[in-house]
Every structure is written in C-alpha cells, then in structure tokens.
Image (cartoon, rainbow, N blue to C red):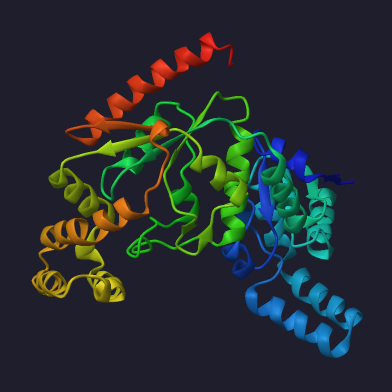
Length: 350
C-alpha cells in the first residue's frame, strides 16, 4: 500500500534521491506547482475539461466513469513514465483527492515505490504560508544601489561560492522594473511564496542571508510583509559602479536588441514621467537602435532620480561599496562579510 506523507515530510524528502510528480493537467502545472516537481498528468487539459463538464451536467458517477475510460487507455504509458524515473516518488494533485490516489494506487500495484501528499499542493501551500509567518528570520545583508550596479551578478557569484543567497527577482522571474519582465515568464504569487518559504527553511542554520534590495512589489509579486519589514531594518550594502559599467551590465542582462518591440512598449509606459526633451532623445535613440544611449539616458534622467527619492534607509544601516567593476565590488562585499562573520563569532552567534 502506498504511504501518505505530510507537507513537512515531503519538504525533507525533496532533499533526498526522490522525485515529486504533479499529476494535474499541464495547464494547472504551468500556473504553479511545488518547486522541483515534474508533470506526469492523468488527463490532458482537454480531457480534464471534459470530465469537469460531465461532472457538472451528469454528476459524480458519470464523471468517474468517463475519467476511468480515458485513463485506462493511457495506463501502460503512464506507468512506464514512473518506472523510468528510477527513484522513489511522491505524487500530488490539488487537494490530495482522486487523481493522486489513482496515480499512487496503480503505481503501487506495479511495484513503484510511491507516496501521496496529504492535502495536495493546497495543503503544501498552507503549510508553507504558516512557515513564512512563524519561521525565525536569520539576519539579512541587503545589496542595494542604483539600477545596473550589478547587484544580481554579485549575488549569483556569491551563491556559486556557497554563500547563503535568496534571489527574490529570480523567484519572481522578474527584474523589478518597468522593463523587468522582458524576455521572462514571470511567476505568480503562489509560486513565489513556495520558493521563498523553502529557501528560508534551507537557510535556518546559517548566520545570515544575502538578498537584493527590492521594493515591496516585484512586477506583480508582493513580498510577504513580515519578510519585507525584516529587510527594511537590516544592514544595507550600497553598491556604486561607474555609469559605463552600469550601462554594460544592463545591456547584458536585458539584450534589448532581441526584444526591441517590448522595450519600445515598456518605454511608452513611462514616457510621460520623463522630461520632454529627454524623452524625445530616448525615442530617437530607440528608433536608431542605439541601446547604450537609451540606457544611459534612462539611468541618468529616470531611474537614478527615482531611486534616490525612494530610498530612505537609516544611515546607521548603510555601508557604501564603490567598485570599478562587478568583480571588484564582489571582492569588497566578500571582505566585508568576512569581517562581519568574525564579529558574529566574537558575539557568540553560530
């Protein structure tokens, strides 16, 4: 018989040689799933809609019969996909109901080691919401600074070297500005909360976490208030690079030549907020596809003034880090963190 596992048990299983399988339809999976899960659906999007319509008009028994008829035809291929995984499996659906029970039952009969998530993805989300509201929040170091100062690049480098980093923009799949969704497929709030909650659980034994300074909203995502308020009262490391380096960083990140129409559309969304002669100069540069000039003007006349106006950190929290390049700034951040770690050890913080 298959085993039912709780959301907490599933979180720990994820760190082992284990596969999470979302058996909902591809459309449901694309909207949000448990991080790291793969999709082996019982029904296609069209089949799920068909079963739902039958349930609505003919009742539960008719819907079950139709579902059985559809699923029985694909059962051998369904089992084959699970066997090819080569690991123990936990299956889940929306509420831990018929779809995951069916998937767990048939796999168990075919000797696939399988669990079912109690309460489905909804139960896991509710558990993660509780974690976000109650988990102890480790000290944060917040990388701040004007647009293009390489904060995300610094975080990526530090994470590659084993530093505890939470990439909020990466979790949102959005870079946080009016141009931030270009070339990306943003996550929704449900997916963001799951990713943030799991990251906080992963770093519970670390002395601090590094994040990037963000407003309360990243695209359409809202940072949970408890975490956001913690960020606001944490040490702020202000990165400062020459504007030429900032322009280069932005061109590398956004690849505007690959997304010209989206860049033009995004610019028109902010054009009225920019002094008219400057807006005309940016528009002309866009027409000529002179992206370095576009970026330089946007930084100088739009982003920098808005950033300076919106930043209101307590001066006692701020440490300025000036560098000639992202690499230079990264080394200086590492030096500062090293000295801070020594301070924490002297204070008896693990």
